[in-house]
Image 1: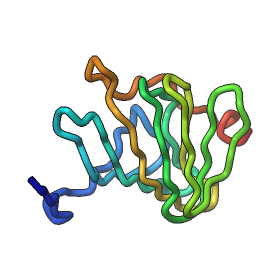
Image 2 (image 1 turned 180 degrees about the vertical axis):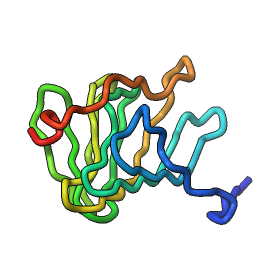
Image 3 (image 1 turned 180 degrees about the horizontal axis):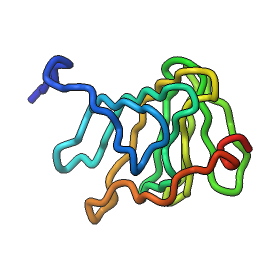
Length: 133
């Protein structure tokens, strides 16, 4: 059966300070119902805002919607994201993502929960040194 989740039924939430640096706002797009494990969230980062280091058991896909963003998998280079770009992050890869220092950034974050039902695994916040590369 077709289901429609109306935007007016979901409020924008400020992302938790223990998992993000700076002002970050989240709009839940989808929390899949079994058997689906899909999750999708529209996330807007103010300039310089970013996630903490984290990983996803089945990986994560980011689709850049607006502004200029950054993403880095631990040990790799910081990559810039612009509208229309897609970043595919491998399963269990420690990574972070967020806005460029002087630009707002919005992306659609998509991931699946692991077979055990677990989603993101969170680590320490990204230091200013790591953020600037």
